[in-house]
Image (cartoon, rainbow, N blue to C red; front, side, top):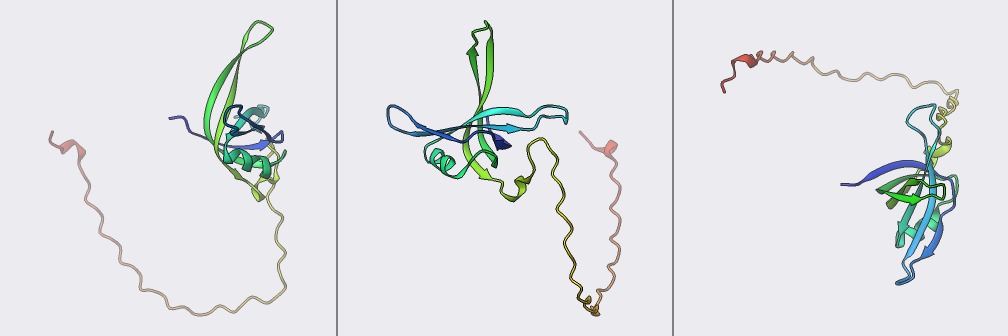
Length: 152
């Protein structure tokens, strides 16, 4: 089964185009996501969405938006003019989720913790007495199982 979920940042605006035969909308855009290690550069990948999802992507998302992509991966092999073959990864998106407030940090940089909240100078409420439950009796220990004595 080929199913992938990826948190990424759009690095290009979605381009909407249509197929020639039945005019199905297709949205294409590029995303970047951090490398596996801290010293690795962010990686890039092309994402494609079809049908109603393509129209939704084109209207709702712009460069710099952080999204959670759900879909399947494919690898395309291209013949380069330099004489070698290049493999490019492409994702066909099935769902796209916006990561609004969580996406404040850029890809590849650690997120900063939120600033401390200001505390109002009102007096703390007085503690109220709450009835306490009776202490629970300790459970009887379970008998030890001898795994060497299991018949086959």
